[in-house]
Length: 281
Image (tube, rainbow, N blue to C red; front, side):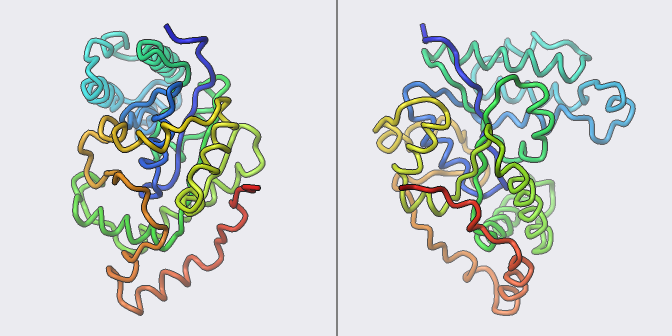
């Protein structure tokens, strides 16, 4: 049996920012449990169902999403615990309770939920998840734009059905950037730069452990690639290689011509990442 269950952790960021790598590193800690992406808040908020939104009722989309999530983790029976129709708060409390139970089942004391798109639902998360801590991962805008452009062209069905154009990729990154910036000084939020993680993995992970409330453990760097196989489940375009990669991605130069690169850099020029640098000394 695990020790007393501790703080719930959410890992968010613009898609293609490296959240799968960071999730795998954190989930390799002996006290931290994690799961494949649930997309829970993405599907529970009735953004296109005005009557349900006005009444605080969970979206019709949540039940199929829960069925898929629990099937992925081998607990199909759990979906029966949710009512056919319920309030957002009611569904969320039940989901959080199940994550605690699954964490105890693994003999661990902390759970980490990683769905990048949850960055757009932080108000709901903070409203309904008591004592939550949130980790933001931010990455070079040019690299994220290139990665989004590539993955949505390779796997369009997994990304809304159609490939994203350059402007949509840029806008998605800028939106996430602005959200993370708005939480920069919040004590229950920690913003991490992907490039710092790659350059100083142990030091950054030690900072994250301090934020989470656990001690650094060497398995975070030795076992993360094994853990990642259980977390990605062959999701389109999501893989973690056994060796932590270099921060010098060439994808931006490979995918775009000179004019496109200049256009992207001009659009991103006003958004500095320096303010997100962790003090590692």
